[in-house]
Image (cartoon, rainbow, N blue to C red; front, side, top):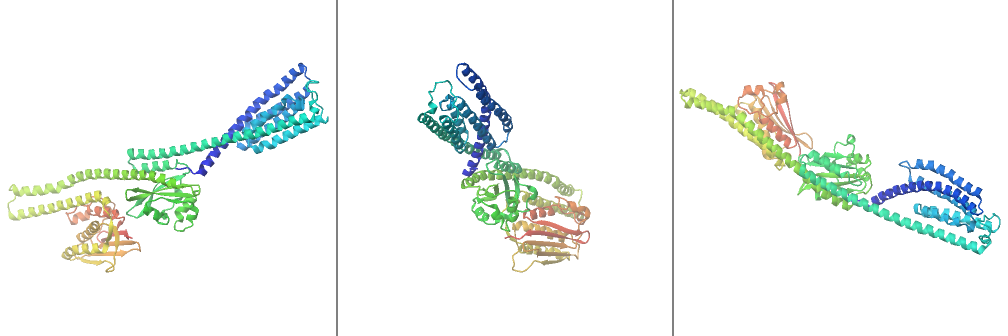
Length: 629
């Protein structure tokens, strides 16, 4: 995703601080190595100059060398501690600064011992000055340089006033220059001017280089982020081409989303058009053990309006949004895990809305307009991948159903078809000639042909349900109207068997709407009512009722006083081609597909089908649906 300026600066500063800490450590270790040579050089150089005729204080020089060796030994062991990973940069900077101050003390002593204002070692002061100015901020260098210059000035004045004994390199060499105020003043002025100029110039160059390094670091971060964006897009495109398993696709895309800068968690909610609700399909970076039962925040503003327009919604402060009681369960779930901002991107294929892709960040106001644009492109491809997976699943199911249909049709149609042809062959081949026998055989053949016809119709109906139900557009259907039609259709058959049929179909003129297909609802009711009439003995009773279970649920009950369902048949009741033993005993005709079809249709319309039954006492079926908005 697009990095914000604040994010870039924060990460660039962190990288710069890490680099500075490493430079501080390297410089400190380099100083420690040089200090061993410096101490040895003071001893060897002092002895050599003294042998050459210079009047140096060897005891003083040896004391300076001993001072450096002792300090360097302590610095060596401290440097080993600071070389450990994770040491704060401030500690390394303070260590480096301490070494500079200690070395300046040695330089001041060395300048005094080699001639004071006329010492050739006076320029050693500049070495540490430049090194310190490169590595440390100017505010750390100016005070130290000022103190050193003040000490040098005090030394020069002390020598000029004979308060400090002058250490002459060689008698008569400098002609008492240290006692000439104008010359000493000029030397000090040049020294101070050079020192401050070097500090200013070195810190300016150092800061310029640091700014350039920060810019390079920022550019690197932008390029890394752009690379991650392109990689995420590429992975989604690759998934579209090679993977057709919905679960794998969703896991892959949420994994890719959380590799982008500032994205710590992502989850996908897929829309269920039947239940008019969103279901959590994939998640990464969030604790599932505290996940709320439902995330219905998408029906609330500002999400609902943006989703209707097909645009993204960015929430800058989840804590403020969580104060809304209706949104609280899902928002509190996110806030409790440290999430502060949220981006909700619709998943659309053409004009169809299939879900949302949600991304969270621990930073307030993390998502910018360019993030919305990028993730809209990202999610457009995710939506294509999801739709491809669903289409592939339908094709696989279609192929399985077609194979199953061919196998089942061949198996179950063979028996009644063979029976019909065998009975007709008895007549055609002259084995039966008596009219009564012929009539009996033709009647049996007709019943078997009727059974065959019923089975063909049920098989076609079952195949149609399996293949077409998911494609059918659901519309509001009035249960009362459909029930009236079905009850009237079977009333004549009930009267023939002297069965009392009653119907309580709610309030006249009131609509009892659910989302379904009219043909599908009538098939459900036709199956339940026809079974009730078919398996109820003469003189029994069938009751049909339409009830409102609540403000949002409707229930249709079909009850009879028939043969009931044996306990042994309950676990198989809704299996395809299954018929209970007592049903077979009562009627030979039947395919065992009716209840299977009815249950599948009820569930296709986001409902449930349940029953209560006692053998030889009757059965009550209840079909329940949510009321259509």
